[in-house]
Length: 205
Length: 187
Image 1: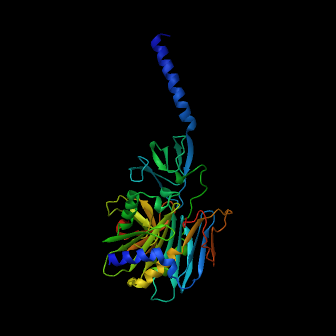
Image 2: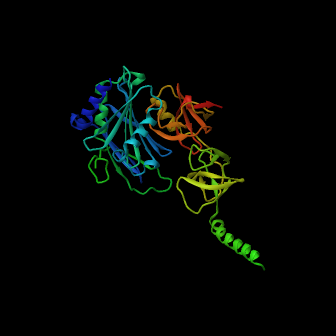
Image 3: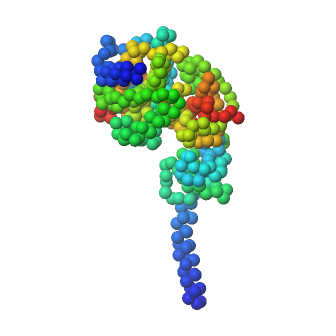
């Protein structure tokens, strides 16, 4: 299983963007004064809820098709890694991060790869006969961005589903946002648009 | 005045001169936790160091350093001298204790994804089952979900929801997340 996952991710992270047949619906989440993240949603998925709470933003990509996996998006700021990226971390720091992630696993496995934009990503999963949960995360300017894929009711994830998730991540962009936030104003704005154009402060750089 | 007396007086003057800046730099700050809970004063500026005393919400502490540290502040409270986390101090005495209301959106979000989560009330206390030295609070009830806080043993957590293996909890500083049930003991 480990070898299959590693090979799959290696190929998909590098070429995932090119595999998309048509442009799917896009969404942009802006947290005013902090960041904007923009992504293309997989076909049949909607961004049902996003909520900022205690410094973290959580989003759920859901589908009415019960054969499709749940996809959770989590973004949280870390003072410890303020203004740093995964690519900036030392091997020791990465190992420390993996140790934190592995705590509850019986047999954790990791895949470290880079997107075609050069953003380093870490995949985490349990090495078992059937893969029912997969997690990919990166660190961007102090923000941990994480995509968590969970098979419905513990059902194993298929290679097509992993491919779909990697396409989402490959096309995802993130930028700093300096929009002023008025007192009492909701900091979150969700746009039905994809703003994947490059910018100097995007994680594509 | 003999030489010994003069020396003592000079020493006293010097000591006073050394103490004046410290006294001048001491300032009063007040404990403010988002859920109205107590604040731990620790022996050193480290989340795993020994808790000397639990400081009630709204209590005044005397800050003993003029240097502002964004993470830890040395201070004195009720005869104890130690360190508290800077983010739980504020200049003004808080008017009233906040009511740690649960956020229905957070509960709904996770209920829609994790069918086994059900709204609950109560309190759990971090009780370490692993040698890591803390209980890991994660942003989602999943093993690989990233950690958003490291909770020292004894931290009281308000329960918002409970699933098969996970509690959704609120920490003393108002952070909401999930903790694996082997890390906590129900109260």
